[in-house]
Image 1 (cartoon, rainbow, N blue to C red):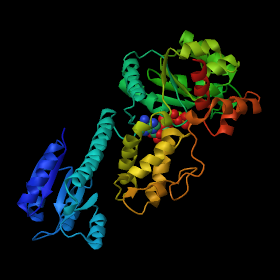
Image 2: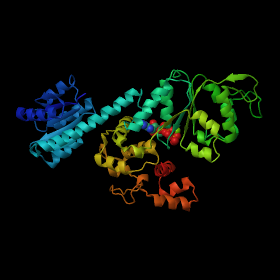
Image 3: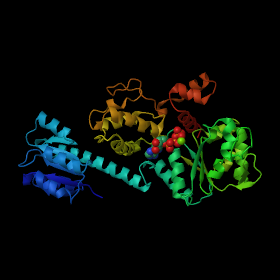
Image 4: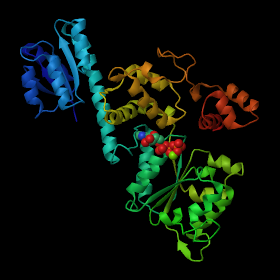
Amino acid sequence: MSARVMVVDDDAGFSRALERICRREGCDVVLASSGEAALDLFGANPCDIVMTDLRMPGIDGIEMLRRLRALDPHLLGIVLTGQPTVESAVDAMRSGAFDYLAKVAGVPELEVKLRRALGVVEVRRRAEALVTRSGGAERALIGEHPAMRRVRELIEQVARTPQTPVLVLGENGSGKELVAHAVHTRSERAERPLVAVNCAAIPRELLESEFFGHERGAFTGAERQRLGVFELSQEGTLFLDEIGDMPLELQAKLLRVLEQREYRRVGGSQVQRFDARVIAATNRDLEEEVNAGRFRRDLYYRIAVFPIALPPLAERTSDLPLLCEHFVMQLRRSLGRDLEGVSEEALAALARYDFPGNVRELRNLLERAAIVASGSWIRPEDLSLPGETPSGKAVAPARRAAEIDHAAIDAALEAHAGNKAQAAASLGISRFALLRRLRDRTG
Ligand SMILES: Nc1ncnc2c1ncn2[C@@H]1O[C@H](COP(=O)(O)OP(=O)(O)OP(=O)(O)O)[C@@H](O)[C@H]1O
Ligand SMILES: [Mg+2]
């Protein structure tokens, strides 16, 4: 869908010139000859962008923009004036204008400003479309990078076969839980419960009862019957988060349940059926865990039937504008403040950063930035990226795994006796990034 621009000017000749420029960029155009006319027209002709003259008989461009933006806070305003002054420029930006320009600046300059606004409109639309497709902003899996499209495709496919176990792989904060949720809600099990267990967070001695449940009196302290997650997820989905952290003895028990599709509560004699779909997730390299004897090979094969691997954020920086827009939309609502977006300079700074905490880290960074930002656009100095000074210049540039050479990796591995986690930490990259580098070298 093309963007719609409202052109407001009492000078009909200038309006027509603007109209031509807009049409060349593929926009629909609505013309208004005064601020009052624009306000009248806007209800029936909602626009994405308004290009307005500053001084007009009746209400001026700034006042008109203020009123239009009260109707639609997403509206991007470009204020044009024949007599530019610092004062009017400041006024325009205060009223929420996206840009300000002297008419004498000429057509190329105007086109640049219009294209920038159109870029913002397009990113917003794409972000909104993805949110709509996923049925809500909270759970939307944002991204158009080929690797993310692939993830969405895999989700759609596996959702259709409600028994297939799924293994979601990815670094911290890369969206594993979102994937699990998406598979569940798109499957025929959607009306049944999705039960999530964090295998790393449950104390060892409670694990068995957490999974199997127990009968009253099964052990000291078991004062009443308790249902385990196998039972709670009946006909639904069981999400085993951080499965790489599950102790070996429980792995054996889990494998038995997955194979026989039945189990008994602790202290119980009755056999219960297990019929949930299992989705497991981990940020560990399970193959490495298997080779190191920390994860059972047979369980690994059982759960790895349908792997879905999430790319680290640093490997899909092309998605940053879309993700930023998505989070800015949410922050605008939750913080209740006038927030337009992330400036181009701030986006460039984000694209240089490695994001060890992936999308979660981006969201947290933006939330903080939105709180400290003085204007309606988030600027580099609002971001406080690790490794950048407040002026936005990198002191020790944030590390990108791709920039670290093999010799440095070898040296780090040697210094840490082959321990990859420690070597990665000393290089300032994630363990996953290190493993990728090693794999690229051999493969
Ligand atoms: N592609 C994405 N689009 C939008 N939001 C995302 C995306 N990926 C992650 N998020 C958001 O980032 C945060 C972390 O995501 P999630 O909890 O799914 O990550 P995770 O891989 O399970 O992390 P962990 O390894 O820490 O468990 C959540 O708030 C989630 O909504
Ligand atoms: Mg998680």
